[in-house]
Amino acid sequence: MPEYLRKRFGGQRIRIYLSVLALLLYVFTKISADLYAGAIFINQSIKLDLYGSVVALLAIAALFTIAGGLSAVIWTDFAQTILMLIGISKVGGFSQVMQNFGEIIVNDSYVGYGSNNESCSAVPDNYMHLLRSPSDPELPATGMIFGLTINAIWYWCSDQVIVQRALSAKDLSHAKGSCILAGYLKLLPLFLLVIPGMAARILFPNEVGCSNPKMCKEICGSELGCTNIAYPKLVLELMPAGARGLMISTMLAALMSSLTSIFNSSSTIFTMDIWRRIRKQASETELLIVGRLFVLLLVIISVVWVPIVQAAQNSQLFHYIQSVTSFLAPPVCAVYILAITFERVNEQGAFWGLMAGLVVGMIRFIWEFSYKVPSCASRLPDPRPAIISKVHYLNFGIILFIISCTVTVVVSYATQPISTRHVSC
Image 1: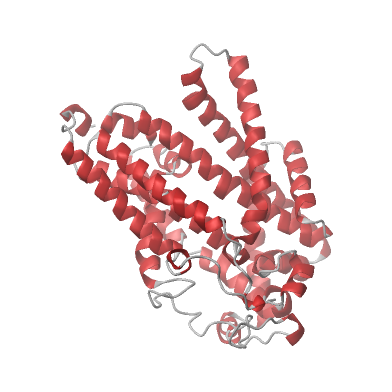
Image 2 (image 1 turned 60 degrees about the vertical axis):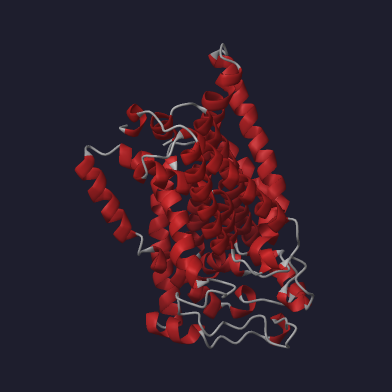
């Protein structure tokens, strides 16, 4: 996709920027998130602390070979299906999951109480609704409709890891058909991810629904809550001993496969797109050494960042990943859409639209993670300014998208039109 923008606009600086952005997103949304997710599994299995679990995970990654990585993912998906069926059957079926989820009662010793003396473990009344108030703190309607759409366009239409699968199709018809099929298959995460999570909340209300900071710290190592342990809890408590070990092994193998793929991709991006521009005569041996050293640097940064992941967004991993994406991805989405639909957009407009979006997004990114948000039960006021605490990250993504589009169009009209040979690419 960077190559498409190079042909569409000419020049190299947009391509270099996208390479650097990809590396940033690898660190903040892929490597650190994978390390934290794996650390949760190890912590719940053998009770290692956070950093001990991360070190153990990296040690396994060093020994993991790429051969068999795909089969590990397939076996993980198979085991997820079995686990979903076991979890739902334990609760009493799909209808009972829907009914019981809103009636969960958490043992009082695990409950923290907020400033209005309300239980911090209570399930919100609108848990079955997607279209909520635009000011809803969890999922505002505007963010759900527009903000997630922007993130989805960036991920599914411009992220190289995804797009290269469509580019490998036999022809255009096969590519279109496979994309449509994949769209239908996106309905499955409701049953593979959401329903098992709800079942875990029903089966283990004290642990998964914990809101007492002291008790939460003992259970999962985080004072903000333990919702991230829902899936490991299902695996460790519901599956028989042999299957439990197999499931843990396949989950870790899938994480290893993901990490090794990311390490390989990040090494390639840095050496081919960045280092070769600095050292044009670099030998293959130099590129190999630089690539490995760069991966080591990424791992160190990611390990240091893991506690931030744990503390961010009330210790909810999915919200953390979506928030970082909302701070960095909308400008890329804006430029891709304008490049395809608006011929007047030129290289200067696209570049400065990306830069404006990056500056605004990074300000929110740094600002967001500079504050430690107190837990619900601490009854302490939120120290963040209203522009952060009141503007949901998905709504911020919409604002960032509009800013990037505006700057791109204004600068394009203020500069010379682009050559027709670029527009016709």
